[in-house]
Length: 290
Image (cartoon, rainbow, N blue to C red; front, side):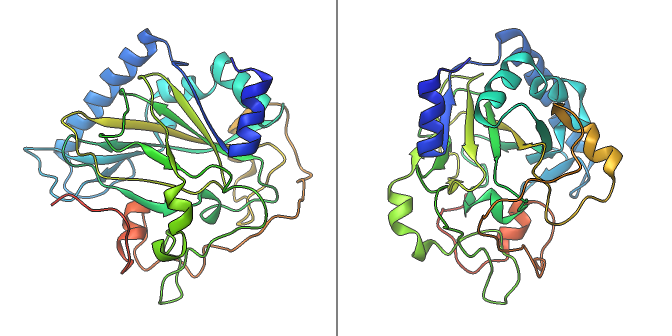
């Protein structure tokens, strides 16, 4: 699926976009499933284990900003991350041993859609090594107007680990935008046709703005780690941990590398999704919809 040159671009920049990996039939099925899930949100009035709701959500006008752990919600989302084209790309970027860390489906409705403030995924789930990335599956055509993910090339290398804590000392899930102005200016959008996939390193700086277009922007995300990368927060259920292996066998000897780490502790005052965590901060970069 990708050439050695593209792999080298990922090593250098920490982000690549691979055009139209998802075939049209699978894309159509995903959209059908997603429409059914959003319709089901009319039956809920607050966040659940499946739904993270937008401010302003009503039963008459369901607004969902995230489907939590979609690979557990419907089998099609588990099938996508285990498909041959995706595994082929992951193997070239990470290696033969792969484990799914988690998944989510971030949704931005037209003229709305909550932004995600600048952060590094690494701040949320540090491991024994950083051979970890996130896949972003574009479920809609994505351009500069409908809130694409923005990633700063090269921000994943070296010893840079930005502070994601708030003034109260608790984990806030975002970086003070005043200290990363140069990095923000260098950010590039992950845009493309529906079915395309972005791959960004776990330490790459990224964020996304409100959707200002008349079109939706739905982004299916998977976090995938090398199988010998173990979460520093520990493994509570080893059988469940191994059930998320995508390629390669069970590993009980974590690979340790010298990586900068700041634990996401003390925990945030507002826990839940990244939206809830970031909402407690007094500083923000992106403008929110009214």
